[in-house]
Length: 388
Image (cartoon, rainbow, N blue to C red; front, side, top):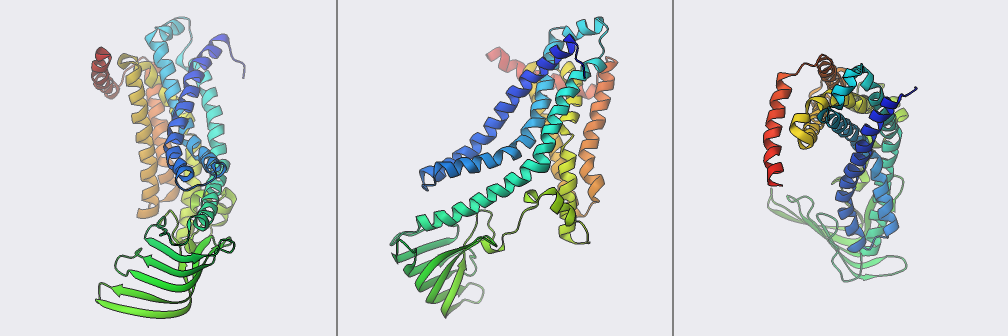
């Protein structure tokens, strides 16, 4: 694809705010998680290398969101700037139509679409799986490190563990006391002579193996108190997602695409979820392209409300679109709506809106709804500009 000087100029005008937006949005998302992960280093003594690995595993999922958003904002700001400086009028006077201006816009959008496809189809599933693997390994190792003799261990929600003695080399415990309050209706207190923390890499289960002890359980429903003795007993630990670690299954977002396709045959709930995940991933790929098509006419006609109004319009469009995506997933999984039409409805809606706006912008027509929104946004931003 050969680019003229004007094409390269428009390309740079879009590329600069797009890349800046990508950096800013990615930093904001990473900063929110960094504060939580930093607590692992400060309070839990987790090695910094492991925390950096966890943070790196989150980037592909972030990029699948920040890349489309950056293309939307970058395109909108670029054409809003061109329009406010009357450069759009000058280009049209030189015989350059909006269709011609769309060429460099689509080039950036296609590059972003390719990057999004790589993230959604390949990087994100592997990164999500790597994140949960690292989290499991840290949970296993951290429990070994954190458990200390004569110290109450309360980092696991609903569980309090106490050991009177602990062998440093083997991790074996003596005089174990466990208060299990994960089920408020059936609280239990467990006493055991010995115990050892066991992690199983096959099913990713973390459990505490106890020997020679008693379980003291109370039931609020029957107002009864029971004491049960045991020779061997195993207590499942609790992972961050609230499910017993022994029942941990791969989430759909962790599963590679080829394995998802293998789960489709059959009329089961898992097959339907796999099909919904496949359509969900593929329907996210064209998002940068569709948002760029929408942002071009929106940017040209949003110059009256200023850059602040353009930024607000960008957030409204983006949040509205992803609300539709979330709603489509809910309707498919919870209400039994047909998978393909429902999952592809948000991209189809975005495409229709983009084509309508682009056509009207090409004919220099304004949408009444857009004019109303511009006036409302201008009313919001002008007082702030005057105060500044």
